[in-house]
Amino acid sequence: MKRLDQKFIDQTLELIKSQEKVGTGNERTKTIVNRLLEDLFNAMADLDITSEEMWRACDWLTQAGKNNEMGLVYAGLGIEKFIDVQMDWEDLQAGIENRTPRTIEGPLYVAGSPESNSYAELETEVEPNSERLYMSGVVYDPEGNPIPGAKVEVWHCNLKGLYSHFDSSQPEFNLRRAINVGQDGKYEFKSFVPVGYSCPPNGPTDLLMKSLGRHGSRPAHIHFFITAPGYRKLTTQINIENDPLINEDFAFATRSELVPHIDRVSAQEAVNYGKEEAFAKIDFNFYMVRETTGAAAGENHRIRATVA
Ligand SMILES: [Fe+2]
Image (cartoon, rainbow, N blue to C red):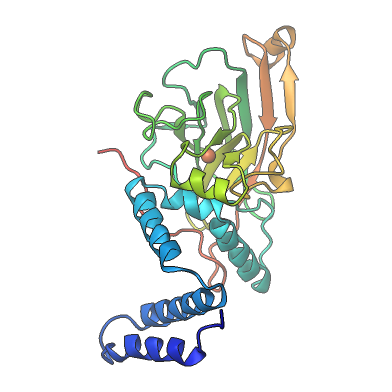
């Protein structure tokens, strides 16, 4: 079939814009929405997208919203990755080096985790059959000086691949903590080595991934927010090395600088560390950058889960 004549696209875009009143509404929103509509209508014409396909898309978007999966869709389509790529570019232009790279937040943060000083135990309930993990390090400024008063927020999933709050079978804030570092900038937490996980089966994200001939799974990882007065919030993750999906994350979050080595310490050696059992050990330092005008923002104000 011959492509839709361009004049019909242009006429329709003009018709839609003709209802905009100058001086009302938000100019930025007008610019963005009109551009996206233009790109969409052109794609509909170029690809001859049918009415059936457009209504399936509408139904899919409705369901993704109902299931609260749009954050997951952003991750799975690489939109969240591309937001990072844009911010990395802004930093590059501003001459800012991220010694600890940012990577995606994902949709499963919950604000208000229990706080403690220097050390935390992440399990509110004991995870059976897990491999004990101790992770520790220092929060540094760009010159390598500790940052007293930095806060390390950490969260990860259980061995079923589920996050507390979103999985109501877990106690609230299980595997979520906030650690305030001391003068030495050090943090340490006790938990267990997490596993990878997949999108909710047969949900909108999972169905989209299958239609794209992709999987909807992530390699094992641990999430972090690092904050300190005068410094830009750092949103990042570390991966568990040797995970089979480490270079095939459906959310594209893996970065080589964020895959620390894991040491395995035997029960006999554990006493040398003041521990009572065999454990896996990760040492990882976070380097922050100072708040700088002209560079990418560290914070965004997406709606995040909170505990009522
Ligand atoms: Fe995650």
